[in-house]
Each structure stands twice: as structure tokens, then as C-alpha cells.
Length: 268
Image (cartoon, rainbow, N blue to C red):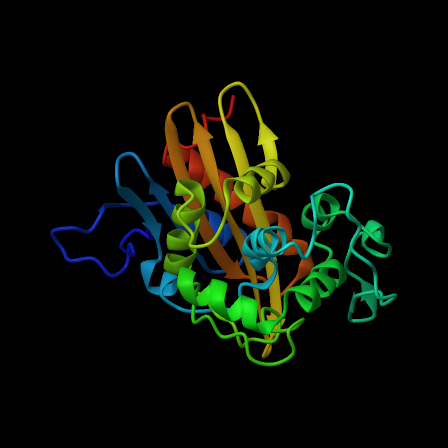
């Protein structure tokens, strides 16, 4: 069962909201953005620029989180390491320059495809899954506007599928709680494994970046979760990203926000 959305609850039921002090960091990066962090145990929402958090954008590569679950659940990919997803032979470029790691220009496992954000691999996966199954999974999960129109290997890239930062939080809450309709424990276990980008004795950080370059507006995402002892946090941020060089700022600002919320320990 999906939890009530964090942005559509009554005042009585709404999570306690605490502002995040991120303006100096966004200003220093020369951009604007938003960030939400939800402390699951405390039902507390930390927010910066909530007005922008209500604006829907293409999820871009953050959709690989759900896409991985759907691919595993439907059997479109058998496992995360051994079933190689075929490459279509096309090198992805932006302004004439390759934008994906070289490992993406070959048949890859789901683990490598997620880690390196290999668009061709996920497009091949999507063609195996098919529009009808996406429509069913996204509709049941209330994932953004659940619009899968257009070519099945393009809908999360072509600006048809859109999602707000609040909706990303709702989706990640369901991922962490393992309450997305139709997803098995096996698929959640596999996702937890391949989505982990940092694991220490103190915490585990799972996250995925995204970058949408459509309609003249480049938007960068960072979406994920933190497990710290018995505590669980989910987060989502996006920012204007007209230059590729601004990409690392997503993680810098995001990590600073997670430290403010107590999701990550303070830097030494």
C-alpha cells in the first residue's frame, strides 16, 4: 500500500517541515534548484525552495531506479550481473562530444548500466518490457504523470513522462518501504545492491543522478536514500544545469543538505 503523498496531506496529517539553508550553495554554483529530504521515522520533511519542488520535469536517468525494478520484475533482464543487455551501436553525444562512459558502448550488465547511466542499455531493456507493462507499473505506483506515450524507448527522455520533486520523494518512500505494487523482494534486493554508491559502518547511501536537456532547459537531478542505523531518509533534488561542468554540484549540494538533516554525518 502506497503512503499518502507528502504534498497532498491535510494540515493535520502533513509531515513536520523544516527549512534547509541551501541558498548560499546554489548561489555559489551559479544556479537555482530545490531539495527535499524526508526522515521516514520522524515523519519530518526538510525542504529548500518548495515552490520549485512542485514543478514537474523529465525524470531523465533517475527513472533508471524504477526501470531497473520493472526490468527485473518482468524478466526483461534476468539478473544484475550475468544477463548482458545488448548495445545498439550508437554512441551518445551532446554538442558533438560523447557524454556516456566508454563502457556503455558495448553489451553491459544491469549493474554496469545503472552505475554508468548507460542510456542505450536501458532503451534496449525498455523495448523488451513494452509500453503496456510500463503503463501498468507506472499507473499503479502513481509515478509522476505516468505518461508513457511515444516510442517505448524514449518516454522518460522525450519530456512526455514528468515528475515533481515531491513525487520523487513519494516514489522513494515506496521503494524504501517496499510497497510499490507488483514488485517482489528479489527485485528490491537487487536494486538495493546496484543502487548503493557508498557504504560505511555508519551509513549506506543509494542514489542516482539524472540530466535532462530538453526544450532548451537543462535540469540535473539527484535522487536516493540513506540508511543510518535504524533511521531511513529519502531525498530528491534538482537544479538548472546549463553546463555539464555543473554536474558535480548536484552531489556537493545534496550531501551538504543531507548533513544538515542528519542523514549523513558531519564532514571531518
